Image (tube, rainbow, N blue to C red; front, side, top):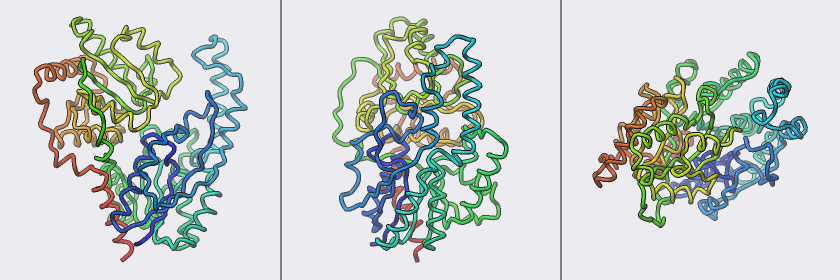
Length: 457
């Protein structure tokens, strides 16, 4: 059996969607004659209320450990986080901007701007760069001692690929680069200085040119890379989407719901002003729900909405819920385990997808969409009007209602349509099971092994 070294910063016992791709590859690779060895970050303890909440991998979900085959070796090394240390020192005793007097906000704003520029020099290309010396040292040992055939690095964080770059340089082993999200063309890529932008674009180009294969998780990402780096052979790029694991839905307890239930899982960025928060902002959905209840008050006791989320902005979500008088409808559950999230999906009548606002986001596909497809429930998708990648997936699988992400009236009508279909016990749409099954994790892992086998001939 051939061997692959998988370098992944996000891996169980840390949770969240960021670790799912690497974890499921690890789970199914041995069934395809490839034995993975994992190199990841050592588990750290963080205090409650730590300012490190922006680092996704610090949210733990030990239930995911069961997916790691017992024969797979997992090597964990420390990571240095100088910026996190400085952040603790720099903002010690500082209150949230939303809770201070206007006279203090200017001072804090200047402090935030200064810290942003400071991070430009310390966090290149991201705050996980402090893992490089530890991962490189351990990676070289593993490649030598375990007779590794291929190096596989998956990002974000994109500093992972610097580790892969040096491992290939020093060992001459084939190297496969995997992008779960774009890098310099990411929706929210906004470097503090033009110099920082040029540096990251240059680093991205060097990595792409040196890799033996580049895997993108959407076709538009692949097309964008090919267009931007025309000197790199087109056949160096492959597409392997994110997906769902059918085994995650097995043996889940299903309970009949008294109310029509809509569920959203994943990250939520909340703000009264949607223009200030374009990422996963449910404000338009909340307003649409409020409008529907105002028009049809009899639905007040017939609809329930669950948000199983990681909240990513400072504004207390309870303020928004109270302002819109949705306390009796909305339930917020903060960062449950992946298994608990799956229970909410299968025990819902419809699933809510909130896309990023803005033109760049149309070619981006939220990872949760694939798990929604696996749950087999109709999807209410708030996505850009342009027919982007997520739109096309929903269209080909016949799995959802698509509406503009900021048209409150259209969203309201879509909610009511889903409710009526549920009340009539009629099928919302005939979901194309064959189209959905192509996104199953075991099938996607087979595609990855085909990439590996094509390199090792």
